[in-house]
Amino acid sequence: MASRKRELLLLRHGIAEERIDGVDDAQRSLTPEGRERTAQQLQRLFDLELRSDLVISSPLVRARQTAELVVDAGLAPELEIAAALAPLADPLPLLERWLGPLSPRPGWRRLAWVGHEPDLSTLAAVLIGVPMARAHEALHLKKAGVVLLQWPASATISDLPGSARLELLLPPRILLGARPKALEPNLLEGN
Image (tube, rainbow, N blue to C red; front, side, top):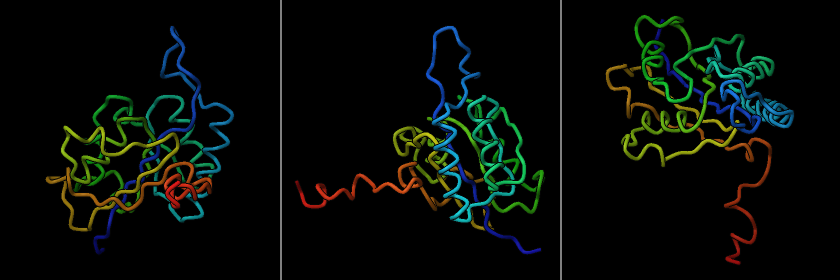
């Protein structure tokens, strides 16, 4: 079987309940608005044919609920949970495992990962070659925003940082059909 490109779709969880002192952050759920907006955004990803072989999620409730919406939208057939996608965890070993010769599913083409900020945008920045010292300021994912990274078929895990190409960076307002702020008429006319 010939090698083919591999892609990683990074999706930040949807709008969640506010943080409350004394309440475990891991237990915060998506709000009703968060569920609705995320479902709409996922429908757009489905329309863009960004289906994945599998969705892997942080174990936190809001991320898991977002990943369940990914499955419900038909963007992935099943869901797995990975502690490596929890806040402040290191997801690189997980990616190395999936890209390596002992991948759990050797024939995969695209994986979807659901997680948190600033972890996902920092990971994406490092993978496209931004130095770690500047990675936290290079990209920012809004809630339910997505990044699509791609590796050539010849990619190896030995040179993972800097080996990916940024294919897409889609904020929620674009997925929901709103006009980008940079293209607002008053900005284009210099007002």
